[in-house]
Image 1: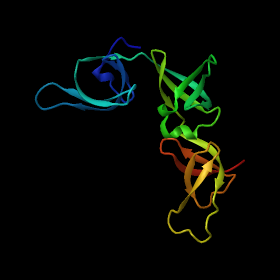
Image 2 (image 1 turned 30 degrees about the horizontal axis):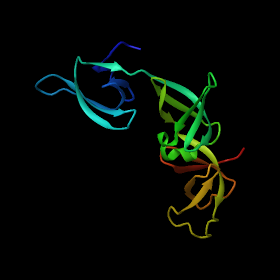
Image 3 (image 1 turned 90 degrees about the horizontal axis):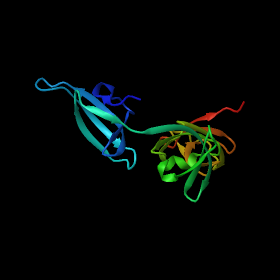
Image 4 (image 1 turned 30 degrees about the vertical axis):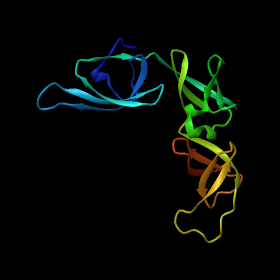
Amino acid sequence: MPAMYDTSDIRKGLKVLMDGNPWTVVEFQFVKPGKGAAFTRTVFKNLLNGKTKEMNIRSGEKLEPANVDQREMQFLYKEAGDLVLMDQSNYEQVSVSAEMVGKAADLMKDNLPCTVLFFNERAIDVSLPTFVFLEVTASEPGVRGDTSGNVQKPATVETGAEVMVPLFIRVGDTIKIDTRTHEYVERVNKT
């Protein structure tokens, strides 16, 4: 890890330390005005509280790297509003708030691989895979002949989450769901 980041190192996802808090770069744009020094207009997101702030960083300024550690973990189970995760390398268990994952927490089933971001040995962010594959456990049958447009119905999947699906989806089907949007993507063929 470099001692300090230069303005030329700024990119999306870069983690820096400002005012004792870890921040990540959400957006950046290099600006070279006709008059004056060049700068990089940057939007940062605080990894602890989610707040964003915009800053102009002049060329030549330095940014301090944040002491963040990314670990591959596995979701084990839910416990009183918390999610229990296990480190794949040393089998150490960590409990994090379900709020950290947001709405996608109800799409998590046992043994789901996750990426957990730690700041000073404290879990601050959990990233799920982009897609999960879940079995439909409850769904009303579609009405025959109702095929006009993109008609959808609610379906309950094995984790208890409710997802809107097309009319042709039946109980027992496995579907692919986008964890970012909580939306149905496609039906998965069983092989």
